[in-house]
Image (cartoon, one colour):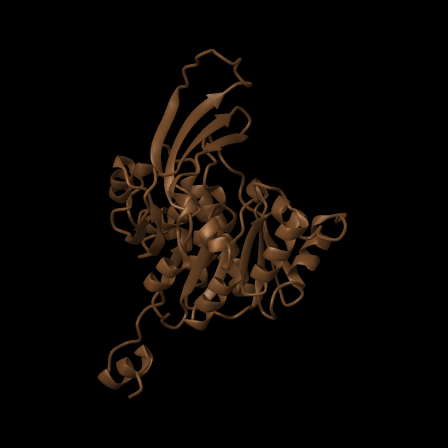
Length: 338
């Protein structure tokens, strides 16, 4: 007996095809954001900081929350610890379909100190991120409907997935997803082994979303790059044909490169932003949300997606605390450019 595809079954029943899935796989943790700090305090002293927020964090959770803000219905796959913070985390993710592996560990926590001028310092515990398993991910990642995207985040922080991360990405592709990856930064630095790992991952991806420094580092496996344009060409050469390399440029906007051509989107001048934690994750979500249902690589579609990413980040970052953003409140960020 053979199984029908979802599309063939729906076609016979006279119903519309199922909408594309937006699945997010990666790090889920607790963030305590504090600021603003002028200089580094002397050891042994105590300082009062005027603003703080305890919230769900980690790149995967940040992306899922941004999707909720945009009015999407994301599917988040990750892990949590076995403590009171884990139950609190579940409450913060209300309205999001979640599959979270419960690990016999404390929940991972990050303390983010925000400095005057926009810089950030993070202190992160090991916690449950050490234990997320590929078997759990694949059990909860269903076959894709047409146009679906699976975003993978922070592989360097997830040793259980990292051991065969290229294989995990390949399996997601086999299930019908267009695979997106935000590599993050390797704690051990960009060693030759890290370069070999990352290059194997990039070859499996349809969308690679990295910041400028990560792009320069990825491109410097053999020798240093002179400039970003050279780095983009080098990294793009590691991707499969038709794949999109997206470079996040912070307040300057973003750059997209596909099929040998680059396109820059210049973001509007940002307001004075206190909390820049999760800026790249917000961009990723806006960009990929605009890409759902649109697999083509035309430059007009790329421009709209870059714009949606920048608008999503610009709408989220000034909000503090972010827990007050309602589901669907930022749906306007996905409207095409006029």
